[in-house]
Structure formats: structure tokens, C-alpha cells
Image 1 (cartoon, rainbow, N blue to C red):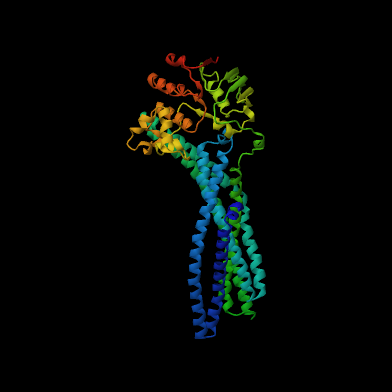
Image 2: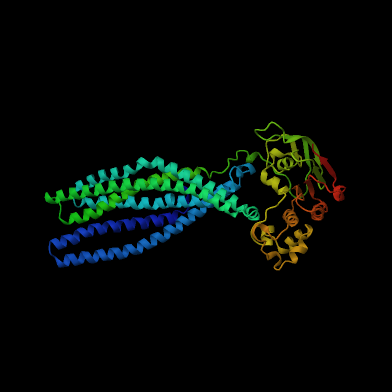
Length: 533
């Protein structure tokens, strides 16, 4: 967590200085109270009015500094939260395929929302409170010295007791925090799954099931939050009780000092305010320290994937289609006894079109996942451009190879957004790619052309048009090898033939097309037809 404060050193230092100033002003207010009371005891109007005016001025200045402090605290917290969100996103997306898919997307969503909120409240904000409480304690001790040195010793001893008492629940705080963050992840996964199934439930008039399922998951997370709040309340109660007992003790000791004529009567009011500052700080410091320790384990979840072999990886040229060679390639998923892909040897020349057919379960999709780098633990050998697949850097492989599944994902946004995907392309380049993918005429007829919103989950596009859109994405980025997994299985014959025609006519494009139903009309257009068994 420290690294996020250090990244914004100037802002962190500014907030820290303001917190110190505010703390000094609060403590000075407590000292001024003693002078006000001493003025009354001495029946001196001038002293009373003078110190009362000073006190009012202090509060005016304090109000200005508090506003500036709170504003800069908010800015700093949001900057650090943004940094943390970017770090999490970067770490989960810059690893390999398996590293990303070790968790559901709902889990990552919880990290970026619920976890961030918890870290803001118990981590980032905790730093500000700790600075305030430490300064309050230091200034208060310095102020108490002028009344009597024994007040410092008594205050420190009672303050340490007040600080230590809440630590009894520190372990419970850490456990409940982790339980809540895991509960949030599960809840978000469940909600996402249920909402995505709305169309199915709607068709069956079972919308109430969605309500019931979400209610069940919500009750579980509610129970976890109640436990978390119970631990917080317990820590606060212990700290509060210790603080009250300690304040009474300091006031009693000050009274004795007054009776023994070792300090002035005004010290009663001053030590009351000052001891409140000190003991309240120590009472809150304990729970805050425990909470800050409790959020530290969250950061361990966000670690980037270790990449000890990146320097050994090789790149392959991306300016033209490359050859692919398989020799006795096979694959068996962990914890299974049957191979998912039987040994296969195959050579795919640059620019050729290869159809992979066969019944379900023979490894057609597994083959494409191997070629796309998703399944690195295969047996046999695979080379692309003469380089063993296991030696090729993942980014270099994806610069050459585009994988298109049965239902390509369409992002919320415009047609242009779904083609450019954050990169810079001219409208002419985009339209050229769309025309080559047989989607140009459709887009030109849309009300706003490339600026037309595609709707939630890409409802603007039919199944076949999604395939053309994915093809256009690859053409736009000059991918020379395309792996198409059951790209036409859900389409009617006419639409399927159009999709197949769109990639079969692409010159210089290498295509490995997986299908369980090869259309006779296009069979002769493939350079190779490989049947897996």
C-alpha cells in the first residue's frame, strides 16, 4: 500500500502537513481553555476576553485548514484508487490465458469495486487518521508538560492501555475482512450468472427464480457483513470503554494536583480537553492499525504472474502468413484418463485453407486452443514459421494468429468501437476491412454508419454478422493466420455459406476451420480436409 502513497509524494506530503497543522490547532485550543478559565478565576475581564477571542480565531483558521485537508484527502484517495485499479487490471490481463481464467470475471469485478472500497475505507483513509492521531498525541503530551510532568507519564501509560485493548480482536478483523471479500466475489459471480440467464427464465415465466437466487446470495453476504460490523463494533466498544476510564483517571489525577497546589485550576479544563484528544486518538489508533493490517492480505491477490522465461521467448515475423507444422501432436486434460486429442501430424502451408472435421469430442477445438497458445502442456511438437510454439512469445503469436470462436464477443459501443478496440484506424481502413469481410454494405445502410451503437451484447448483429465482424477485426490488423472454431455451426445453410465464402476468398490468408458439418458446396475450396477420429 505504501507504494501508492509514494507515487504521489507531493500530494501525500501536502495532506500530511495540513493534518499536522490541524492537529496543532486542536491541541492549542485545549491549552487556550485553561487560560480562559484562569481569567475567570482571576476575575480579569481583559484576560478572559483576550483568550476567548484567540479561541474563536483558532476555530476560524482550523475550519479553513480542515476544508483544504478533506479536499486534498479525497483527491489523493481517488488517485491511489485509480492506480490500484489499473495495477489490478494490468496484472490480470498481462499474464497468459490460463492465468486470467483462474478466476471468474465476477471475481475480478469484485476486486475492482468491493475490494477497492474496503481498501479506501480501512487502508488509504486509515493513513490520514493515523497521522492525525499520532500528531494529536505528540502535541498533547507537549502541552501537558506545562501543567505538570506527571500528567505526561499518566497519560502515556493510560494511552498505551487504550491502544492495546482493541488489538485483542485484530485477528478476528483480518478473518472477517477476507471472508467478506471472498463473499463479495461469489455474490458478484452469482448475480452476473443469473442476470445473463434472464432471457431463458423469461421465456419460461420463471423470473421469480432470478429474484429467489439473488436473494439467497444476498443473505449470505449480508451475514458476512454483519459479522464484520460486529467485530468493528467490538473493537470500538473496547477502545471506547478504555478511553472513558482513562479520561476519568487523568481528570482525577489533575484534581489531586490542583488540591496539592502543583498546578492551576484552569488545568482541569485543559487536561479534560487534552486528555480527550490523547485518549480518543489512542482509542482509535488501535482499531485503525488492526484494520490497516487486515487489508494487507488483499494486495497479495492482485500479484502479477511471474514471467521468468520472457527473455528466452522468440518472435516470428508478422508481415506475412507463416507455415504451421504438427508432429504427433496430442493433448490430455489434467485429471482425465482419455486423451482429448489423439496424435496428429499435419503441415499447413502459408495462405492455404484447411478444414478440420469429425464428431464431437475428438479434439477439434482442443487443436485450435493449442495453436492459439491457450494449452501449452501438449505432447508432440508444433512449429510456426519453423519456430517451436513453446518458444514463441505469446504477444508475437497473437500478432500472427487470430482465434474466432462460435459467438465472437461484441462490446457495448459503436460499430467503429468494435472494430478499432481502442486502436487508431481511419474510417477508410475500417470500411475496407468490413467490405473484405462482406459486412461493408450492411454497415453503410445503418442510420449512423460506423457511429451506430451496437446495443447491449451486440444485439444489432446476427450470428453470421458477428463472424464477419470478427473476421474484419483480423483483416484490419493484418492477421495472416485465422483459427475459426465452429464459426457457422449455429447458422442456417445460406448464412453459413456466406461466412465461409468471406474467408475462403481471402488471398494470402491461412485458415484452419473447425466444423462438425462441412458443406458440400464449399468442400472443394479447401486445400485440405482433415477428419479427426
